[in-house]
Amino acid sequence: MSTPVFWSMAFDEIADPDYADVAVGVLPAHATADPAAWARALFSLRSLPTWLVLLVRLRQLLGPLVGVPRAPRDRFAVRCVSGDEVLIAVDQRLLDVRVGVGVDERHGIVRVVTAVRLKGRLGQAWFLPVRVVHPHLVQAMIARSRRRLSGVTA
Image (cartoon, rainbow, N blue to C red):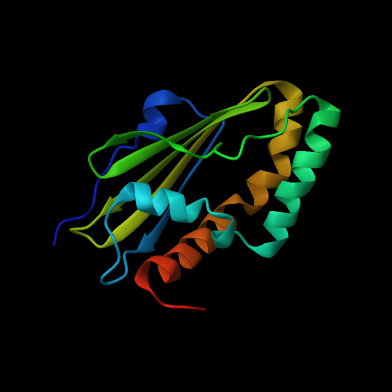
């Protein structure tokens, strides 16, 4: 068996990130291998833990007070597709984020690659709590998406 190797589009756009991580999950049997479907599932409110949904709503309320405009509903829309990966790009005043969602059907994995470029001290401060929870959060999002896309209810 060969080892999966990849390069993510997330690093094409942010080659020298201030933060980066990779989360990998098992592709469930009978689940779609369409990376766009996985991206939509991952960033659906149904894939987010309840506490994060509350934080997202709080961010929408408080962000404008520190100069961060409210995020549009389609902020995590797929920007481009290349092979087995889609790219999501979010550019904000305090940071730029690139997320590559890839599905390696041959090796049976789903990967989420995140690259972040921080802008200034306020961007660093804004991202500090995110840095701590991000890996755990993405794993939870993958787990919830796996259940949804495999037809298993939780």
